[in-house]
Length: 179
Image (cartoon, helix red, strand yellow):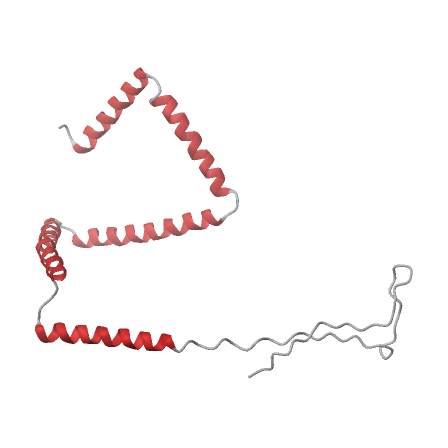
């Protein structure tokens, strides 16, 4: 173990300042010596932690062995498993039906991969822009300004609001068809 004696910072010098200037000294006249205190010894690891971890592992192993021999699952796990079994086939069935209706599976797969790559790239670009100084603040002010202008232009007055709603409904009907 390291000793715990405390040493102090000592600086020995026999010279004095004259006219705010330090006098010249020869290297052999009075050596300046600085000593640093020693570091305390590292903390002793608690002996209770490994025992707790081992006991926890033993308890888990005992629970697993008990479930394996009795072949009974807790009620919460049974309910979750039944719910997952009930929902999964419907979702999978719907996806399989939609996939079978697709004629050009290669093109759809390529578009899906391209979409994932584009999403990943745009997230990286937004992250890079967000790290730049001033840019996020400027973009936020621009967004607030545009939102205010849009609300004033299309939502503040009744005739403008009705025209905006009519345009939204027309666009909706063009995209999805008349309904």
